[in-house]
Image 1 (tube, one colour):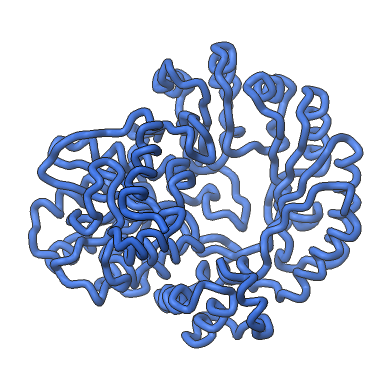
Image 2: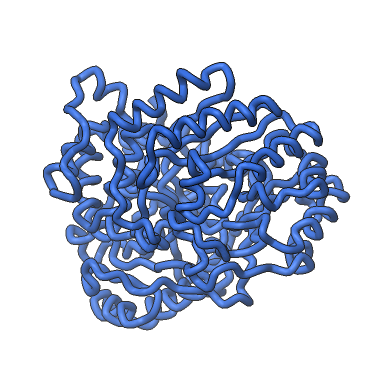
Length: 503
């Protein structure tokens, strides 16, 4: 069993490998938490941006903490969760900011609060506890399940609103009055005031773009990669996507000259981030100087119809071995239905370009279980996957469709488990040995769906599931008892299944 010293030594090892960590003294302190492991949290550009924004204030210091790899070690050694910068207990910070990226991180949020010594539910915390501020990418879709755990949330882009929050916090010592004041300002959601009605999300000024890394480290999903936005938002209208053109002004471009001026001279790897990076009309003008200087590059979003020989050659020279694109539907009929705007010939061309430039793998992401999907659509997917695989090695990333708030497909039902599993079995049977299959669990997609479509009561169901061990059976029971959605889709699990589904 790890003791407190070993836990601190592990954190110090991570810190020692970082470049850019901010050390400072200030009268006001904020702990910025991430409800997943360090390697995931430090790959989040939004998390790093808010870290920098808070620390840009001369009177405020921001320190970080993450969900430990082995949370039980903290409990067993009676070590309270502590910050990376000063190793102070998180409970000592008056403000806890928590960035949440997607629905299934809600149990990480609960666990972080407990490890810090706070009751998870906001109603059980008095004014002597730290104020818990929520935010992050999840606020663009449905943050209501988080509502029971926080006093206030920043919705949407937080570059300006984090400063508004800190200004108000410093000016108003009475927490009740503070929350009432914040509830009247754009971009803030105060559950005790607003109830289940979400205000509009915030939009940062274009002058604040781009977001870029504050810290680089080898211990992340994107080891030692300096991340920077090439654009924000998307000009397209895919009906399933939260970041479609109606979100915060559509696509906002960053000039290549500005991007290149912000890349540190010592950065050996540079990642361009955005919902639609390959739609940037001057993308190659950004990539070429980076590649010519000997840097590796990464791009967070490539669309098959935007690929050109020049672009793929730059990707290869920048270290790419795998070309990743999205089909997002198993057939052309469904791609047209969800307004994806991509054709089979674009995907074939992507495979041909990848092969021509010496890449090893074409990875294609898609969803199954879309509204109106039939066996005929799956048949088309099988035939087309074989056609792609005849050009070069292919991997299919397959996820069940989950409807999100603020999209045209909001409220679309989740396909039943038997149907989804039958489709996945058929794909394995007919494509096994032809393409690599990387499916997402249908059971956990159903949990994501319940959270994505739920209100605050879905958060209470998550708390019940967490306390019951976080198995799928516990989630199913939690949702069923709280009436958060449709009746359970699956038969009860026996004990051995519960163990295998624990997560």
